Length: 151
Image 1 (cartoon, rainbow, N blue to C red):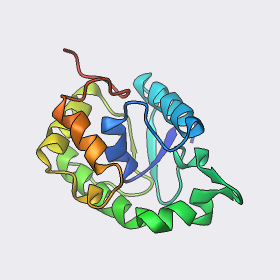
Image 2: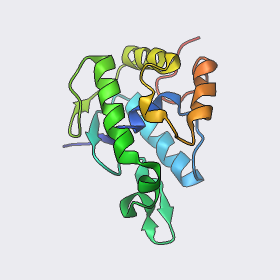
Image 3: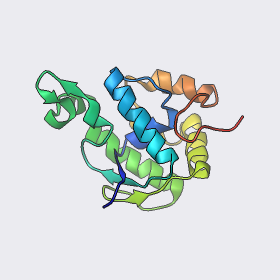
Image 4: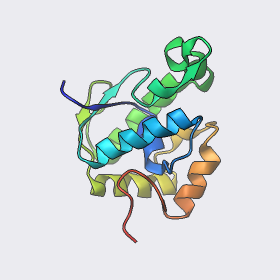
């Protein structure tokens, strides 16, 4: 497949509230670049396991997502499946690894409304970013990087 942003399931939810905060500066730079590509209309392909966002996560022994160091601790694979199901219901399309999509502003707005109401946040339970994302949603998704709402 030509250029496409590779995303795992739970990152479909993370991208809705991403405002430029993250684990490391490298992580933030990578996420910023990917949001720019998506804002420019680049296609997304869903994947199982580490994706283009995870690529920036490095520990002493190399990429920590590839080693499972971060993902196993976070139960990311379980979050991915729950997120795939929630977003598929919301967009009324079948969704799994290998699904391709090109998100539009209206779809992001719809997903954000459901996120703010809690209707698609099952995958967020127990996530260390839960409170931060809730605050961003409560402020009307101000300063989000992906297709920001127009005020």
